[in-house]
Image (cartoon, rainbow, N blue to C red; front, side, top):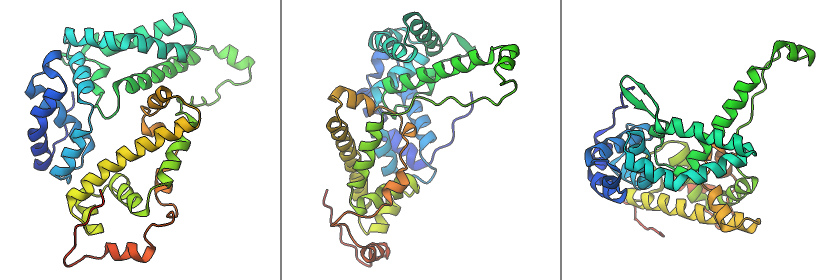
Amino acid sequence: MSAMKPISAAVQSAVSDLSAELHAAGGCEKVGLTHDTFAAILSEVAAKYLSSSASSAEARTFLQTLRVEELALARACAQGHNHAWEVFLTRYREKLYQAALRIAREDSAARDLADTLYAELYGTSTRHGERVSKLASFTGRGSLEGWLRTVLAQEFVNRYRRTKRLVSLDEESEDGSQFAAAEPEPLPSADARLESATTAALAALSAEDRTVLASYYLDGRTLAEVARMLGVHESTISRKVDKLAKFLRKKILNGMIQQGMDRRQAEEALEVDVRDLRVDIRRALAQESPPGSFSKKEAEDRLRPKARPEVKSNL
């Protein structure tokens, strides 16, 4: 197992401050994870996604967005805790089969696909004396159910590619395609209604809100840097980022419902990995401001340092 990327003192401080609270919120004791073990998992996840310059406030915001109950369950299963695996099967076995059936569209193939994934999730092999389970790569940033569907879809694509490679050269020659370059198989894409609703939700944001999101998520600026840029306190930006995330989720959810989805379908669609969306996020955040947004001159004024900035939040 590769060594964990080192994390800054600020991030480690945030992990230390929140680990007891998140350990309790995740029901870690029920699935066999000690406080120290879960703190190490939180440090690992933080190290993966936070830069070395991340502040303690940024780390706290990040850690508080994790789905800690699902993270604890997945990692407990990966470590071989039997009770955790029983809970996992109770919650997800039927859902996994239904997802496999939607992908494979045939009962025996769906069950075979799901069973293969169970083996990889349970961890039937070891590496360097340690159990190897796909669940060890779940980080809690999205739902476990959505992550499982993505892994299942990828396994189906991998199977298809392996099967395709078994076609004989004679058969390929007869089709006139011998030695032809393999066509990449597209992964299952997000529902078009999700992409449409996401684009509309981003377009509805004010110029300042889009500046905050683009600076923080796309340009990699810290909360403190964004705060200085807009002449407000760091805590204001932290609350604003959290509020915008909740607003966008609600806006996108309502947008999909208006396009004909029922609420359950819309909520499931929202569990897709953002990397599967065919939306140019940067372009959407950089588009023309809707009426009422501040002008270019106002934006430039906000970027200039202020001698005595007045903190005024509308959150």
